[in-house]
Length: 445
Image 1 (spheres, rainbow, N blue to C red):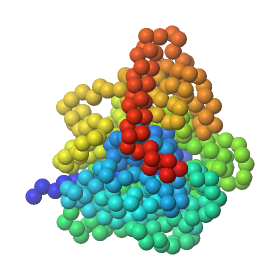
Image 2 (spheres, helix red, strand yellow; image 1 turned 180 degrees about the vertical axis):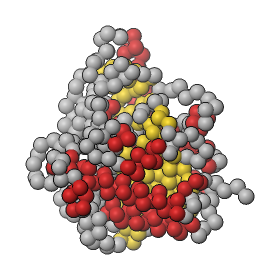
Image 3 (cartoon, one colour; image 1 turned 60 degrees about the vertical axis):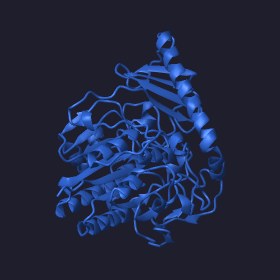
């Protein structure tokens, strides 16, 4: 009897391109993610669909550009905050309707009101938090990033019930709860979809002493980053070991990615300083979280899939919006209408060339387009300070992956063509936004 493959998607938070040893980090190692990459495909040219968390996560789960999913910015953490609407199909709702047992563990950040929670998006169960960041031990949201309030809000839930697990390190809780889902799935006749969303290494920068001691030789900012990532890497190793122990590994699609590039926000520091934070690494790339330079949107990503080649490194420009239609193809489930991403399965199987298309991004005043090896950004900035670098920046990523040389004046014809494409796409985005989502968004922020 045909058994559809299980699906495990692992998301982490603010992990930079250069923060895994399989992606080039040299000051600490991530053996479990490295092993997963060796047993599958590592992407060295994969993009999130936004340089900040809520829209990036919405894009992954819906296969749509963030504005088409109704989530364009970081969503608020208070309990009246709206977000992703249940009318938008997701991987979870699609697989649930196809007979999958579905579970979400960890960070949601796609709406706090009951109408927007995971169980309204096809998840049979949820254990985690709904805002953008919480204290790792008290599980309390302290950071009034959007709604400008300093009032703390406890934020740990099992389905729609508030629960308290004070004193337990949240990365370990997410791992433990994910393993519980896998053990339940072992006794079920249904395939499973598990969305494990770690908040590491997002601030506040917390890690148990055993991990801090392991990296005591590193500078404080990098020590914290290494400790938090290593705790997560160990957790992923435990999840993979559970899959193997339960004989589920060989029939499970595993996909891992970060939601955006590393954060330079001063709130990453734990000593009150206001300096930019340099603990995370974007590798050789320019820019950080909030930026449409490569450092903000090119991210670590790994796909391990039964029946596909192992030990492969992809150099093609994949986007997170491609994951939904590709998972649908891998599970033999029809993808819903409205998906912007491409089904990559024919290319993954070696039966077709990589699809040719323009990729687009938008973030506040920034708009970007990639066509082939060329990438153009309108009104780019490098980080959360939003200091505009120039009006138009054009780079050939094949020759200049670090985006140091602006070719806009040297190549006026291509600059004009890509500018027109970016502006037309952005105009379409704004029209759809105003027609379908703007009123709800204003209630959110």
